[in-house]
Amino acid sequence: MAPRVFWIGLGNMGRGMCKNLVEKGNLDQPLMLYNRSVQRATELSKTLPAGKTEVVDSIEAGVAKADVIFTCVANDAAVKETHAAALKGDVKGKLFVDCSTIHPDTTELLAKGVLARGAEFVAAPVMGAPAAADAGQLIGLLAGPRASVERARPYFKGVMARAEVDLADQPCQKASMLKVISNTFILNMVEQLSEGYVLAEKTGLGPGYLQQVVDALFGGVYSGYSKRMLEGDYHTREEPLFAVDLARKDAGHAMKLAEAAGVKLPNVETGDAHLVRLKEHVGEKGDIAGIYGAVRLENGLKYENDA
Image (cartoon, rainbow, N blue to C red; front, side, top):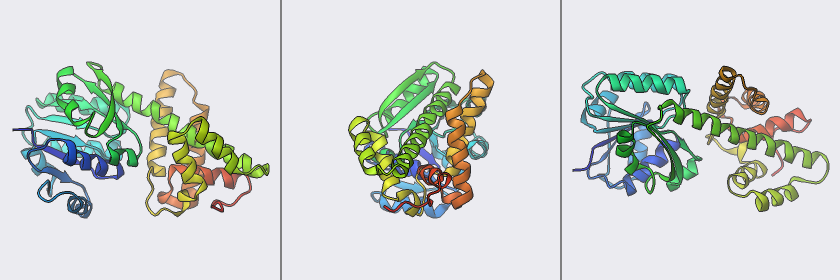
């Protein structure tokens, strides 16, 4: 019989990952779902095939019945709280897989806590946007003892992910280091696109021509963010894809890593400053693509573009 799987945390990424676990994960028992908002878990369950999921009312109840426990929550405090609840019962022999984006020190703390209780731990943050999560096109960054990584691997490439970075037998914190540093590329890309499109508008060139160059030269995620900026998605959507508070959390982790290593990250600092201005302007609903709006404000334009 295949292992019983329990998923904790149903944000934008978690929902898509669960969808692919149900559809492609070869689970022979319902995927257990838990979220602090029971409504979110119930709504997700209704969108998936009948009988393929089970909403549980507590972390402790799910862990007790599970062999494999995935966590994918918003921040370090939330994942610590989640693990504190998960480790209350007997967890010997169970596998914990954390997909959250957290500071490497937090990851190491989680790993020590799980191992001390006789369970296994894999750090497995993922790269990709919510659309990639929904399509099963994420990149998994898997670290921990090789036997534990191999136990987690069947749920990644070909199921929730299109590729993996193998960090087996590396300290778990290295997966979080890789995720935090990689996310600075996203922040820097959004910052550069924002500056470029504002400059194109202010010089009279117009952003459309620059977008054609971006699409032809870079494509992919660059084109995706360009579209969201220039079509006004950054100021019209109700729920952020990559919320400003999460983006600032990731930038903060990167800057702390840099400070400890004696490295300066001026590009990240600039992006973070624009995230601060974004949060001041639109509050928690701000999306990282709204850096474009913050750069527009800084340069005498209104926050919303005329898409």
